[in-house]
Structure formats: structure tokens, C-alpha cells
Length: 142
Image (cartoon, rainbow, N blue to C red):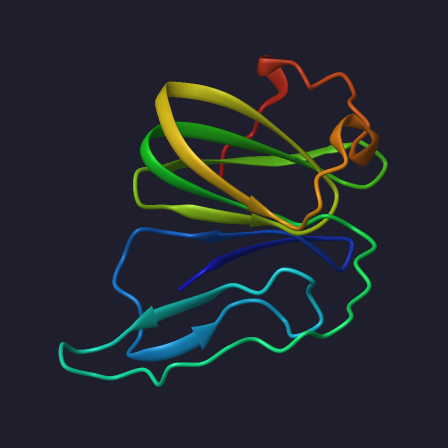
């Protein structure tokens, strides 16, 4: 089951732990999210029909990103839209997180190999505003 972090009614992040998924296709994001994430589990021999994705014009107003941890350990620090620290979570190999809203920062706890997926096209530094992280003495890991 995904761990959903909400703050002031907004979903900040959805953590997907390395554990068996339910059978079939199970979307864990609301259909309104610009980044859609599903967990899938199928038995050997199942066929998924070939398909193409149609060209559909979409408007994306905020970047949502997914981190998939291949190896290592990462602390994810979550902030609200006003840059106020909310909480932290630790994820490791096989885990993933969808960063949906608010702000976020990271501390590498073990050498890490990860994949990041987010909307494009990439516009560089104009896509984000950096700010000072909360001090380690304030961190609350849940």
C-alpha cells in the first residue's frame, strides 16, 4: 500500500515501498495528476495488447517527479509551498516516490543509484526555485 503524505489538504508525496503489488494494474495517483503512476503485477503468460499512445494536448502547470531507487538509501525532506519543513522519509533499493506538490530536498545516506522521471521538455534552472534546507537537528523521519 502506498504511503501518502498530505499537508493542509494537499498531497505532497506518495511513497511506494518495495513490496509485492496487488494483482493487475493499480493506479496510485489521482487521475488529475499530470504524472500518472501505477503498480502492476501479472502472471507469466499474460499478454498485454500492443498499443500506441495518441497525441493529446495537455497543460502542465507544475512539475511532478518520480524517483526510483535502484540501490542505496535516500532521505526525502518534504516542504509545503511556502518552503516550511513538514517531515522526512527514508527510502531504499526498490522503493519509489512521486513528489507531487510543495518542495523537497534530499540527503544521500548511502551511495545511491536512482532514476528520475518527470515531465518535459527540460527548461533547466528556470523550472525551480532553490531555498535553504532545514537543519539536520530539525529533521523528523516518519
